[in-house]
Image (tube, rainbow, N blue to C red; front, side):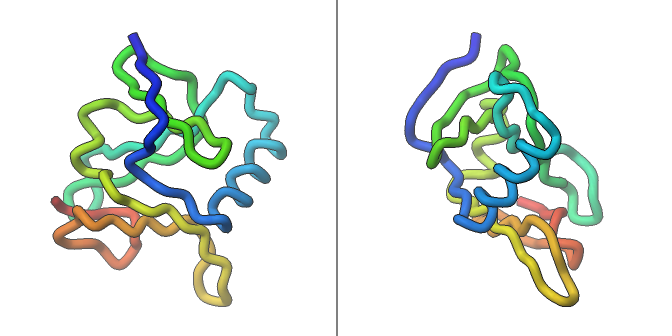
Length: 115
């Protein structure tokens, strides 16, 4: 069973929240979906980040942050504690940026890390 807590282990910058709200509206994401943040094996540094809207699952912990319901598998918290998700809009780069204090190494793509 999922559990809900109020203190999120990650933060979303204002830019990330605006972009996520825009995506949620444009893709008509159902209200009961939350923002899934996690990791998966793979990528050039060992782990890749997961970010997307999803339904709550049995092993999730649910957090609230600035109006967003964040879904996270309990096993992923170790890798994501203290992480900030930002949105970058520039001439050479556009997308979500993961500022993770737990990452020992990162890849040039910014979506892969080792811990």
